[in-house]
Length: 239
Image 1 (cartoon, rainbow, N blue to C red):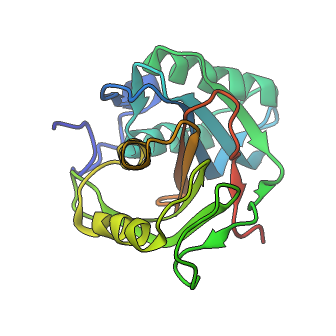
Image 2: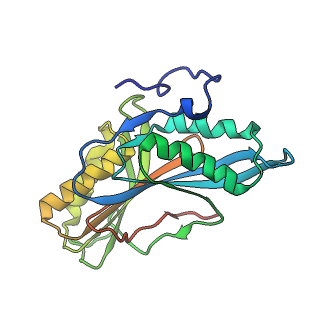
């Protein structure tokens, strides 16, 4: 796997669209979903060259032919600090045009004033229950996986909504088994969705990975059996 910047010394002269590095998606598991990318420290200049600091959300469909490598997106967005725009709309349109071109799909870009609240859930790390109920939103905290390029760990909380009864001991052990596996955030959630659906023959299932941010950006994939998603772009901590 060859990447422009991941695991390499950064060439700070590279900026704009050329800084973006596309990653081709693996074959779909016949699921729907999105990837919510949140850039918490997005900085640009207004018409008077005054710095503006915003939280930026980029939404990429899981059906897109390509997604973007995270380090390259950081380089791309970080270069905006010295660029002046007439309005917020102009900033968003520029990012939308470039990321849409890269992913070969329709995306959404917007500024956030607040995140949605975390859904009520059953935390399977601490519960004494043996099985979940079909009505439960299931939460697993402390999920760990490994970046396949840098071998650095990534951490997340995993949320699952399944119209089925799931054995909690099995689910805990299964999610813990990722702690030394190397894969990108999106593929981890794809695999979790596929494996749970296969084991329990679940017709209605949704899996969300709420990953911790790195370099000011977090990636939050959702994979679902249905177009209307249960989970949204939420945060456990809103302070």
